[in-house]
Image (tube, rainbow, N blue to C red; front, top):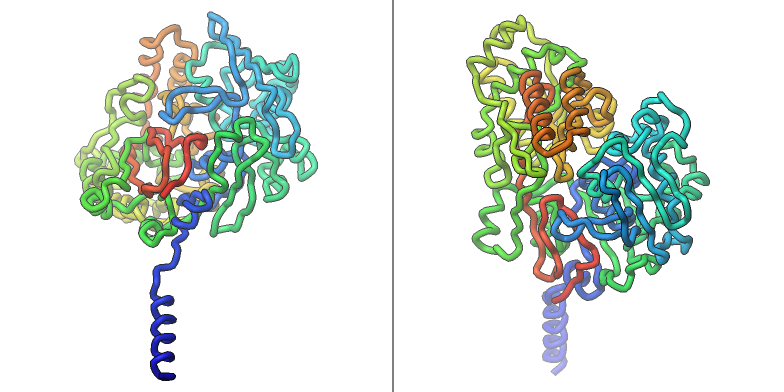
Length: 535
């Protein structure tokens, strides 16, 4: 009898041990905690200087600008500004802030907060890469470039606590879309001033328990290389529509590991998906697979200030040696479309003429003309990457093979972790960079990177004709004239090859069926009001 009791007890314990444990995903559904893959560990959480798409989602959960982008990725909807007017000439925008907008410490969000934040973006001491976005504002460029030190010369005014007025030098068709971006989120200046000052990049004010934000969530916890946690903000003006209690952004630089985490019930949403798993999910779990085109162009950035890429012919040779169709077939599959222009066709209604091509014979001729026949005598070339896995490494390896085959050139690969990669690009400490840009729906957002002195011009390329064409695009009286200016910039870059487009990205990722209200869009924008979790 005792043996029978002991047997039953042992069997019961074993059965309990073998029962399925609750997964993180199931627990998240129960508690309304969304677990989302984030690819990169954030370098910081300072929206004014952010130029990383992986950090952008975190910032969009913490902060909100004057306007927002709807779930379709294109419609501009009210944010902190409940309404706005634009004069018929397109030169004056007047925003009216909602009285219910609050910071997470309960203080009202005012027009002065936006004025100070915009001026911080223009501060030469800060050196924000996004400063060029506000150059249409009267006096903004002169202030950034130090030709004026008077803040009153900039066309930003706050006549009262709930009114902000922007006066432009010329019409800017994409201004509202720009204002929905992270560089124009307001930051709480009293916190910055008390924690290192508003002139420094980032700082102690970004820490959990210190960061004051105005978006749907507040910063709860930040464990480096583990997760960033944000919790529902009860002081958000539209808090009643936020159903998620918490969002955890989980970084991983390995897309295979991220996919395994999804299968193991540790993520509701991934940031990406390995190329070799796209067909697997399409066949077996099509409801979880999302494949969408994005506005992102992936390209090579040649540092024109460092040998051997100071010579246009060397840059042209490296670009001409690339078979973009083969690159996509070998490394990307459905996740890429060959790029023969810097701007993806269709962005903002613009369709560029493809000026880039594959011509290995001409590539060898250009390299020989530059003094390096068959690659002989060419200084060592280092190829800088963000990370050392997934698509990034596959693309780099295919390019290495093409340069060996078509140019006789051996190129070494230098993978860097994200923070080091950002530092190398900002400080121009590279020869050739595997880069990418996910713009707003306006061709000017990509093409501006080729303008002399633009903070995002990592190539340090400078061309008077290019600059003139960019200025013409900003002051064009109509779409036809604007398109002609874009054509001129594309043609100059195709000739000079400071930036060599490789492919237009198509994004693949996974979304668990429990995630409700998710909407795919080409800019990857999440509308937090729409999301919740359900069994």
